[in-house]
Length: 462
Image (cartoon, rainbow, N blue to C red; front, top):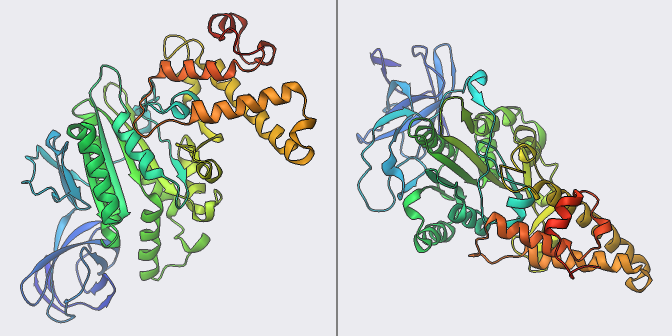
């Protein structure tokens, strides 16, 4: 091993896939940036994914093809991967490393920040408050999204979560406040990426959206960097420019697969389902970058989207995600098969921060009781449908039949809405009263009497 200077070396120990090992070097740091110059003089960059006394394991962005064990010059930069940030990133499309994909010059960056971010002091965190309206009735009324919250969306293969993700990004807003969206796509196909861009351009919201695309043929390390890059931009806009930022990340399953692939290359002992044992802490490192800070007006809200393998909600990815985040929105294959869009399953979905951010002075006085009553009545509908499948609908009581009528109306009127239908919270609540009023007033035991008198739709029920 020949040492040219304190920070540059010639020659590698071993190359395995996109990773190489170098020894007999000074002690370097985890996540440190590395420049690799091949024998033709072309430079590429990498990051240190494992470091020890006198050695380092480096993953090369773009792969190790063409690198030579003997003629490779390695330069350690003594700094992490940095990303440029400014408000000019809005209305732009970038690849997974922050390079423009829209044939426009690089934005004028105001500063450069560490892509890995820094932990927010827990004592400085503010409790998430005030809602973000998404225009989706099932979310706004039943699983309300709060500023500073982490609310994942659990989907399955073939369910239109991409369609729902773009609809939320187009429609989400905060009344009277500066608002923007970081849309992160990892491991997506080219036609899906084109759909995302076209959707935002045609809807007229492109100027408040920044898109980060790591396509399916991109290296695994790029897929791991992409959400960190977008979150670094979000932190700058939220905590230095006082904006409310919604970060939508799809698909976190592709991110975790890239993590597993990298772990396998490094020869690490696998844990559940072959994923590395640090999957939980790695996901937490992303999700915990959401939140609010005391004394700062801005906020970062996250909607991570993941596809559950075999629709298994106990799979490590949704399981660990559920531990870290504050609820989940679950998409149901059975509803999707019946043509209901968005196919949001209300019963397994929940928002743990919802109860503190709805009601008088926050949304509307009837919101807490109505959402609770809709949930309870729809749960009863599921039981009655199961009973009807055994004894037949003709054996059901008149009240049971009213519940079935309510269940159909709830799914076809309340849950179902067009891909371009943006409902205000007031419209969604009124629609909830329209369907719940199919039932007699005596069944509405979770709503206060004075609220029922004010909002119950006359002549719709009993």
